[in-house]
Length: 128
Image (cartoon, rainbow, N blue to C red; front, side, top):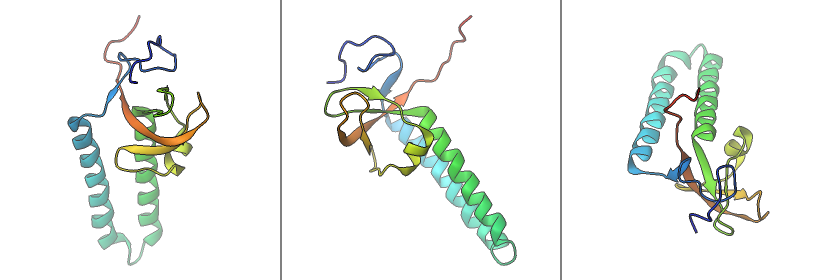
């Protein structure tokens, strides 16, 4: 199911571009969320009494950064057809999700299902 033999840019699992989410990925995500929650809690003590609008801006800005980061670094594996796809930032924000799945419509087969989350490998070597 993971590898349909697709070439890069195809629908199947490209092992050079995607991999299953590892424990290290979970720790990194947990650290980012913990930092975001800490900023919200700490800023609430100083900003809520008189500057509640700044506190809301901090929450909205932090949430936007997390959604952009998540959409850029994660893709999804359709359980029905095995297709791998990425979603827009808006779809990533609005779609219902579980701990390691997201309810999405596969662009290949058109079915809605709980898609598995995959990590997108970062480019470490610059191409000339």
